[in-house]
Length: 166
Image (cartoon, rainbow, N blue to C red; front, top):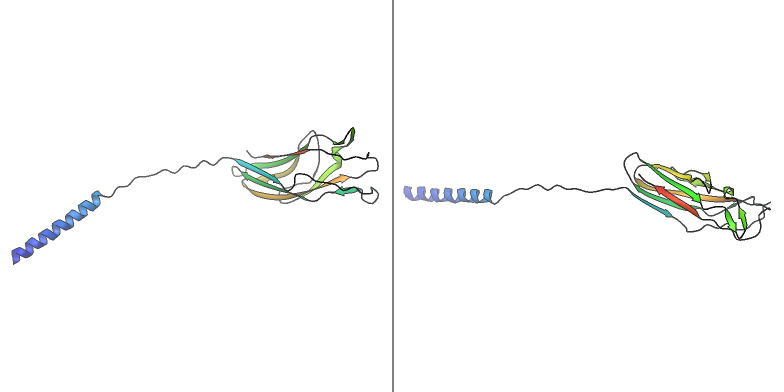
């Protein structure tokens, strides 16, 4: 009986040893490197494709004001990098051969980093100076000097907005 118990214990020990050995042989590890490329990106969205100034008596309304324009900026860049938005007109406001000097078009601005200014057709003017990556929102409200000296007509100009992200 003692021999049977010893044999039984030996068999149990052998089975346990085989299970541990088999388990250790079935385990393997391996490393995986994870790489992600994050590049600079920029996205500029204007709240409208055009603004309009309604006609008014220059004595009553010496300045015409358009509805506020939303300006949404999304930028991805390095920490502390300068993100800028500039505006540049293609020339004066023109109606046929008549024109209104583009410097008569000014704006106020709302939102952190957004600044007021006067339109120019030669040098891009700053609308926003921002820092680093982010989702920024501002408003721009254009005003136009209203004068009795303007010839009648429907005047237009194109303004180009440029978002720069290093």
